[in-house]
Length: 566
Image 1 (tube, rainbow, N blue to C red):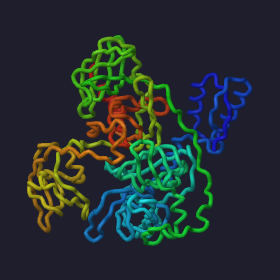
Image 2: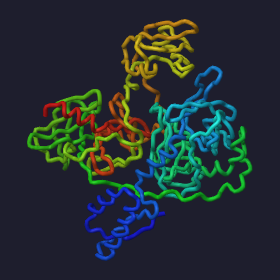
Image 3: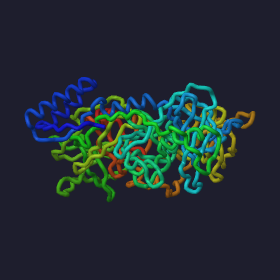
Image 4: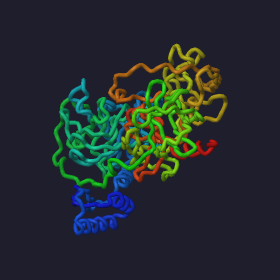
């Protein structure tokens, strides 16, 4: 735990900037000691700040070190028929916790004796078998404890199992949310809000959704403290099986068995582990600016002030949320009519203009962070009215094809024999009407080299006709098919779909973006985002899902603005 020293800080901003500049542990510790002595000697007004004692590292450093230590052990899993070499179930997550290949996961996703294909972050795959499973309440799937075992010999990369945690402890989660479809896990950050609720779950603010089940929650040293089970509608209510439950019944969980009652606990399972790192956390808020509140089509949305000068005021907004008539809601409730001067449909941006200098602080001349974001960096979104939201960088940058707005093929596709096969067809969909059958292996579109059929398909729009090369038995065939408009997904009552504000209507098809766990509402998209040194690094361009806000990299914004004659 932190020791606490009372500081009197007359020049708080200077002090905070000095602390951020100190990166080396020994120098940081020495600086704090001297600052404490100076504060006591001069008798400045009292402010309580944490001292990191023997740890002395930032939260970003701690998170990134933990990712390097344990992130390699976080895997994506789905049920797999080893004879037919075909996926037979939806994806979920797990974590390897021993060099010989034992994994922790959730009981609602795993069954003893069933086989699973496990994919590591680097793309390596292996087959695992379901082992021990404790399910004393089949209806509620409680306590939701299960293990699996990799069949091939190790050693495997693994994460160490931790021990009990306390309320308020910082934690992080790596897992594979199904909605993103990414081949690597996304990072989330939070705090333990309840070490053991009424069902014995550990509750944290690390947001979950479908696909995250079975994934690990880590302490700040990268040790597993919980396994994802379920979430509630409130974004702060995410439930995880405490790792102590796995440790308690470890001997039974290493056997291939389904337990309807709790097995005999192991002796010595509750031996204490060394305390986790307690890093210096970033501030709850920064001095950041550039947010605008825009009104169009009877709704409000966020915006980013780019420049305000004698030549006028330029504001960037989210194109799909705004119509031809846009107003800036200024201080005191006054409205300023804005003119649309440029559109960027590719990245869903629009540039708005007022001929007046509205004397708004803009981001054009602020310090910029044009570097590639690294998972673990803290982010802050500036919102209208001086409000802010904090999140963490969950992934590196990547391009998002227009998957949700792409043409509809009308088939469930699965991996099979290094190709993509049709698992089943929408009987009224384009593929069925064009004569495709289950088990057809899809190879190429329009004769072009393939980067993966599913990825290729995402680049074609509704009403486009494509020619698919496919394998049916021993025959290599070609068939034309006209893609359709993607049908509206039925409303879901799953808690992961019930978060405040919901998803953005346009939430993919962007260039150079990354995911953050920042809880940006769909009506706040278009707002500027800064790193923990108050450097402008992008725009929150879309709310993608419960766990992911899409951040458009500042380089894309700077490049586009530079191409315009302003």
